[in-house]
Length: 287
Image (tube, rainbow, N blue to C red; front, side):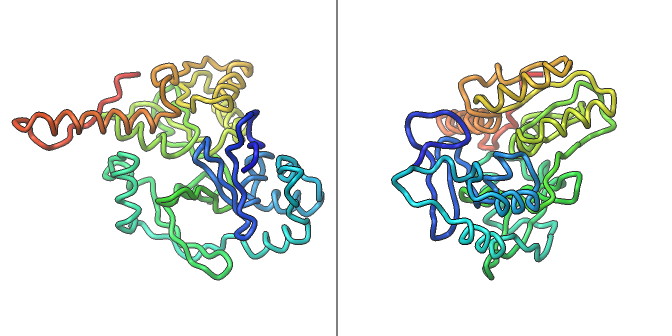
């Protein structure tokens, strides 16, 4: 276990599997390949990450590893990168049952509302085939999520604008699971939305908003240092920012807040047998 390169910490929470060349940050519940880590640290695309890893053996992606542990060598890393690049096989409009179940049971997502924004992405790594929930971005790439801990990207990586014909302020989300939570909580969405697909896309998001003369945002970002830093970047750039994270301050993100609310409601209904077992929609009381 290592100290995470994604933030300052004293207690290690970052695990590396050198056999599979994967990592997971237990504090965030996120992980992926060395390429995914480079993309997140450097805020770059998949192809750019491969180039950066190949150009410099002392790249930042290796700096966080313990001195008592051998580093992954450059030749070993670049060879694995070539074999671990995700090859897109197919895109389907229908999610398989296990991914639907994950969204409904684990994430408490309203599948009827979420389905128009999701695809089932089949891809291949090292000759093995995988399926994941796919969320398209504006460059034709996809953010990926499975029913375990995997979180990745089919390049190119970019932001995802949604409901561009609706009113300001723009509702800003770090990841698509928070956007889907917002959809599930709201009766009707009346604002434009923008999913950054990573805090590394803050600059792209600002550029997109500036091009459209948008001056105000409601930020539904994570309750962590990265989320707070991203909010401050929007403020520093001159946007009027309403930080919505204050409404779910005891939770790590909007989905975490949403899941707790839904589960609490279910528990209440189970204690009251005379009330219909149908789970009412958890309305978003924050604006």
